[in-house]
Image (cartoon, rainbow, N blue to C red; front, side):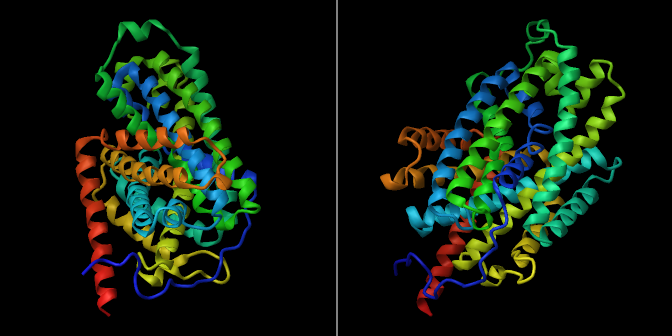
Length: 427
């Protein structure tokens, strides 16, 4: 018996979400997702993979991210509803492509929640309390998100401001002690082309926050105008910040020391003799990661909502609270999964696992945007071709353990959907 394209029962209906976010709110949520998602965590493993080649990896990750951002913006303007590329893939390519995107996003970003929770704990929790503190951070941001999306945006504004202040101090310290001789005196790791590609895959983790804007499409005012502006604007600002930080760290620490520094921004302040700045940078790093965690949790909840509406996840998760206009059950399910993951999570593996899932998500985004009719197009097709090829290449160059785990969980999701559709057809 062939597997039907969609389950026999119709989609689950639920109340629409309220449109409460403007352009500035959407940009801030995107910045909160990106700044803190990688600037405090990804440069050290990227340097370990590629040495000074991490700058080339950063440039490659930025190019792929820009292509993905334009595809996502083009799709979100045409389909301003919750669910992001899960919904776009269903509408442009078919239900199975949508499921591939949605499942990749959910598993990848659940791993990101684990990574961000551990980063918050690493900077703010006492030694030995990392996992309990990470779980507490997940529960805290879930409580904020349950209050409503406007509370999420307001909290994100504060956390982004704190993060930028901490970065400004760290970059000033790094540039104050910058020495180009460190690049040649300490050549550091050199993984060749594969190392550069792996560093790009790891650094892509830092750029993925603009997806949160698209997943909130049902809650943005004037979405056809607001979403493209917010996505591209947030990404360009983040590129500028990351490039400055990467150059400053390499010049201040050299590639070898950078690769061995679990907290490279704080280490740069130490090397510059700015001991007073180290605790301030630590607080900013923890709060920035908390901001990324806040926006990340909201985005996954909306994707789970969209998948539940189409019965690709349990329909009970499609409920929207009438007072706060928040998908509370979906949000609580995400928090539970993240807390379970935190019991066994490893930061570097979590970053690679997250990149694998999210790169699959954007692969579908580029293919869906490539399929769009001319009347819906905002960007040239070659951007989508480059984006799709880049996503496929980087997904295959994440660390081997992350690649194996990601492929296994992805396969499990596909098998689950196939079995569910067969059962629905028999009923």
